[in-house]
Length: 323
Image (tube, rainbow, N blue to C red):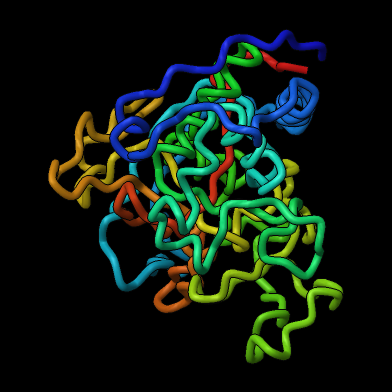
């Protein structure tokens, strides 16, 4: 698909508030070729999902007991209908995320010199070194919610397609292969955790081949596998269980399912706490949360909009196939 580059997107209000530093252009600007490659790759990686009706939330194991036992914010499940849409088969990588930040002139905002404290642990960069947590094919962790949202908006501006972050209903529908009764978004609905990170950091060898069908480990470890290292779920999506947790567009509210719209729900209109706003994060296996069913696709929770631990993927809200 040939795409014409458009003007850089205007910063949305959240991005302006959270970027802090000047967005002036620098010598690290993205080339037109790298932008076109990133946008074309995003389009090529889309998987079309025919819409339908499913029960959103913890539908319970066959014995009718809940999958998640330490939270009630996903119970009782609610029936919702979704229009067709497309979703990226991969989590957004460092390669593509860094091109975006260069193109909008904000890459240098997320450095130690700019006061971004997490740069000591998780620099915003893409590396050619497969042993680096920032290897260009590994999933990016956005420095905040705003930049994840802005990345999808940037793709929309560049491509002319309605890219956006998924709603949590879209996310779960996709993870469950169009709403199937599965607890894990893996090739067979079960989870066999890769043993890769189950050792002290000094003994972690990135050349070790993947094992199992997903990677879940503590968010305190920044190392992850390149996207697509494990088999996809039945509709062709990778790492919706494990690797990194993922932002959705919904504001978090514990009681959200009690007020969920029956058609294309988008969550609450505003955060429940305006001073400490939180967005819904899905795939808590990506945060290494195993207790009480926290690694299943039903787990949901709110994370502050300035949280640095989460990755993301984009959807295209169009009811027909893109390619």
